[in-house]
Image 1: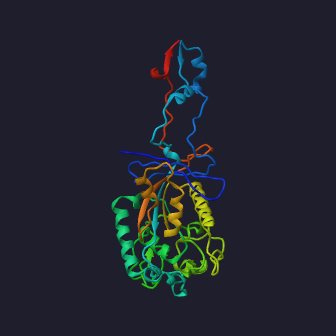
Image 2 (image 1 turned 45 degrees about the vertical axis):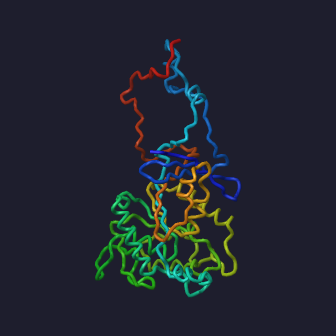
Image 3 (image 1 turned 135 degrees about the horizontal axis):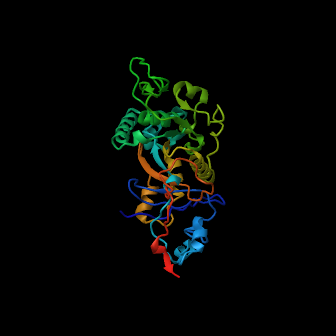
Length: 350
């Protein structure tokens, strides 16, 4: 399996950057990302391998080679390795086809029309949702998913609950709080249950490129809570859409700034297997911050346009973390029970 290349950011905002990622099974893309001024590979020095057993080593008849000796002579690999406990699997999804997409295909000016305010999914959009829903179940993603993060617009929330939610609620069956009530959107889709689904959280950081286009303007959170009762909107601060402007388009610098804030938000979450349902322009700007040092093939896998209801699975790596990790991990400390364990291949005769 060929792995790895550094993904470094080209954020036009100062001074922070995002750092490298690698390719490795089972994920088609590995995305390494964490805030840092310098994303170049660094070599830590000092501290021997057996620093916790320094007293024993001092009286040993052999000299143990320290970590500094090893690191100073090692060649930097083209691959990249990170502690698994610092990684999060992120499944990036663009929403299904909306009515604004159909209109904009033939006339771009349609995106300026108030007729497509907070556009919902078309019949084909729901078919795309069903296709991706079947896929995430067939490959096991539905079984491991811990959280669904969604942009608070109708088409993204419909897509999210359709893919990762429970079953359709038929004849008012009692299935707990509905992720979506009956009849939302132009296609009047059936209600979708929350039972058996992971938590859903709405986050404005991952909204579409904002301003001018009514299709990217949201309704009030009060309205959304009535339509999507089981989605958590507590992270959205304002009931009204104060971010969207009818006269000004969000600048690229502002949009890149949102991608940075969103990554920081994801890194702070305790969940390690997360789906994100967002929009074409946001996802393209997000992925454009990565790819430096990668092959043309890997860059294309990162930077290509997202089709409606396309999903790409990546790994987000907090490689610049400075705080001690205190969560669950598959690592095991060893030395239980304790005993002599000086490895012969790192020791030399005195």
